[in-house]
Length: 512
Image 1 (cartoon, one colour):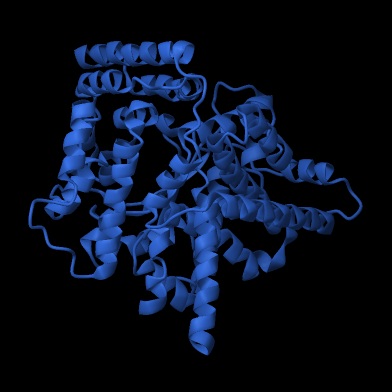
Image 2 (cartoon, helix red, strand yellow; image 1 turned 45 degrees about the vertical axis):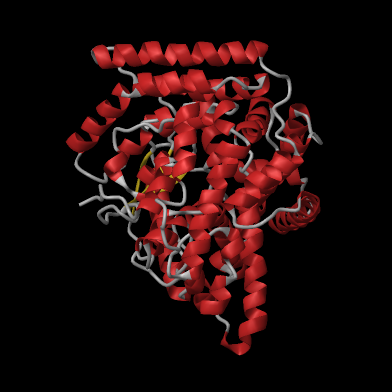
């Protein structure tokens, strides 16, 4: 059975201000069919409730206390200091999103009922959005309008009055964002101090943007060198661009894509278990097509959340649209699902990446760790696993795997650089798009799409930041533990903390 009960009142107050994360990430399905009150008054009430009722005692475990305090501070910064619910439509768009009900955490009829109840609450959510969103910069409105328009996928024009009302409400939201796109402030930059507060508060620490930018540049240079050297190993004397095109040409058919990913899932799970890299090897994954509502992502891992009944995870893959031309289908497969990239995707999403971590989250020892998850740790862990696999000789040192690791890491380090650049004013949107073209070989709309994401998702450098934090801690563990260090011991110590804020990772050294 899934959980409808909330943890203690202090955690409940955090969940009430993080409804999507509580429902879909932690599996607290008392929020099924609910929308978060993101009106100005609703947010003020939620902030006032943080910390729990008067007289609430700190958590007995100092780590859990610090973890919960970081989650509360992050919400105070996000909604109190920065008031992002008034300037960033993303929070309101995610509040309307129904894609979480696609996961089979309960039988379909129960999820369908929750979906209908959620859709029935759209008028309340749109009322709150229109009231709250009074500071939307024009570039941010323009960047989020495609996401808002995508909500129409949840509306069945034949679905009766609930769907008809939802269409009207969505149109109201779209009209509000279109006005902001035409009339809003010209700059969407948060400013350096605000960006540092937003990032640091969520991770129980501070972020020096100058030092971080320097490290990002160093990582960029390292990855470009790895990529160039690996391409030369594959085809000595050939132009790197020609080698990349040749690698992209080697891809499965649309009809064979899921089956090939199934073989890669089995391979990565077996390889991770053979090397005993993580504490739990009971990974079960089903490869399946991505639902229409989530096709904006090429692939993703959807595992049962900590408070849900256990079930195999779904590794979902976005197949080419049946309405695309042959050339469009081939381009989608060549750039996103060629046989060079696919093994790295399996490592990241399955083992020892997200699926392996998901098994540990279900076993986290306290409600704090089962409920509150750092996205920087979750994505940083999976990104770290790509480099880990390369270090450990996955696929016998095949240089194509090194190419994939470097290419994916370049995309993520470019995101971090662009998030900092866009929000400190060091980059324009055009500069950020050019950076994606130069370092990630994205062209035109694809480069602009990645750059625009940095406006509404200023934390999208979390993959690289999380990887940095884990690699730094690993070196500290080697120095402290000496001959007693092992990857299994280090990874187990991390997983015992659930998905902790990056600033609290040193607890793993003390308790591992």
